[in-house]
Length: 237
Image (cartoon, rainbow, N blue to C red; front, side, top):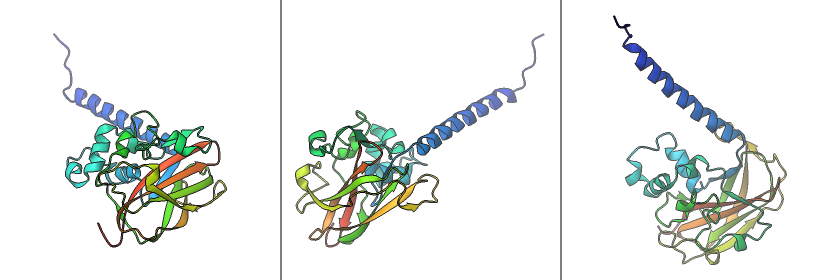
C-alpha cells in the first residue's frame, strides 16, 4: 500500500520557495544600497527616474505606452535601473572627454559593458519642468563627498528627442568645487539613506527640452559619475 501524500504539502513547498527567493532578492537589494554610491535625484537622472516610477511594477505593460523610453531601458537591461546609483568609471584622472566618446555620455562611455547603453538613446524621456534658475540635488548615498560636481546644460539648438548627446552640445554652468564627505541633508528615505547635496544652477536662454549633464567626481577615490537628466524649460516643448 503506497504512502498517502498530503495534497497541501507541494503547495507549501512552492510557497516556501517563493518566499525564499523574495527574501534573497530583498537581501541583495539592501546590501547593494548599503554599499551604494549615488545619482542626481532632482531633476531625476534617466535611470533613477525609471527605477523610482517603475521599480515596484517593472513588468507592467502600461510602461510601454506611458513611459516608452523607460520601457526600452528596462527591456535592454533591468540592472541599469536596479543599479541607478552605480553609473561611474574609475581611473579617468579628470580626462572626461578623453574617456567618454560622443554619443555615449549618458552611459558613461558604456561603463559596465552594455548595462547602461539604452540611456544614450534619444527620445521622449520623462522630463522635469524647471525654471531657468533651479536647484540641482545629487544624492551621495555612501557619503563620499566630492572633489567637484560639474553641471552642464545642453546648448540651444540641441534636440534630445533625435540626437545623442555630444560634448559639443554642452555648456558648463556650475562647478561646486570640493565638498567634504558627509556634507549634505540626511534623507529619511530607506532607499537613499545618505545625504543630498543641493546646488544652485542657472541656464539662461534655454526653452523647451534640454539635458542637464552632471559629473560627480567622488573624493574617496578616482571615481567619476556621469548623469543625464531630462528637463523642460519655460517657453517651449
